[in-house]
Image (tube, rainbow over the protein chains, first blue to last red):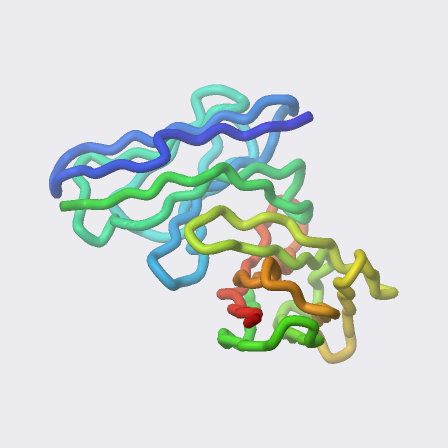
Length: 112
Length: 111
């Protein structure tokens, strides 16, 4: 069966520091991969999605970037975090754009 | 990408009550529809897909009205454990266009 791993579960970072969040999927090939952010009490905001290695679509302009160096690996990065980057970051996968997405456990990021 | 709209709630209902949530979507070309459940400080989880003819899973019934472009979720005999936020999800277009998630409706079931 397919599983998705996302780490770390919680992260506290100072303003201006870099960020790297990693997500991996097992048990499937060529999944669609997604990064979302959810501010406290708010809805999901799609940040990036990828339909294949090296293919990244950005949904919202910001100081974050994403990369997909391997088929089942999706990385969210920032060179310099802002206070507004705080939130709950979720990675998800699906077998197609119109298929259900399955989420990792999420990373709760606090910027100080 | 078009919008998905839901009443944010909260819906506060007693145990055993029946509660219904509606959701409207604006993309008439949407073909896939889902309800997700999100517990506080957790990831969203797929509750059920929504089929054209309507479908039921235990105490949960989902319906689709394509003409009016709305989806509903009915929960019968509410349990305390049903307390969560329910997200309406619609596919955003053809091919690999991502799903569009509603902001969710919060349900609190009270003893």
